[in-house]
Length: 135
Image 1 (cartoon, rainbow, N blue to C red):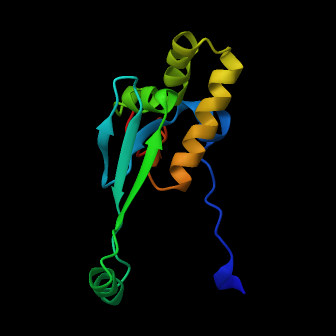
Image 2 (spheres, rainbow, N blue to C red):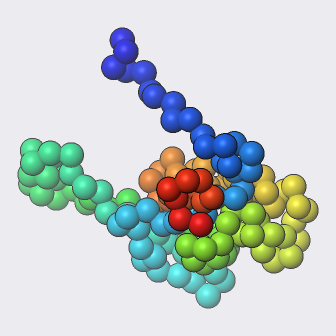
């Protein structure tokens, strides 16, 4: 039973105080596959086979090991704001005037969007300011 439980990773003190201080980064293997003039994007992420058997079966069955995700105009704007330096707070502040959102609505949209991208494996967060981590 213990093996089935997920281990909770404790948040650092800085992340617990202010989750919007984290810096979003594209996960390894994620790239922009296409873009539209309106600002929408299609992201692609190459899956790595879990074993040699999985790789062989995928090849035999001609299974595509690429996951694609379509982002609308807001999602595309968010993705373009990610530069490895901007925090989630700064990206949320940039969303406000661009899409006529209130401060709270922009923050909530940012948190929900980041949560969804992380769940799908397209995004990682870097938490700065703790000992041993870059500032």
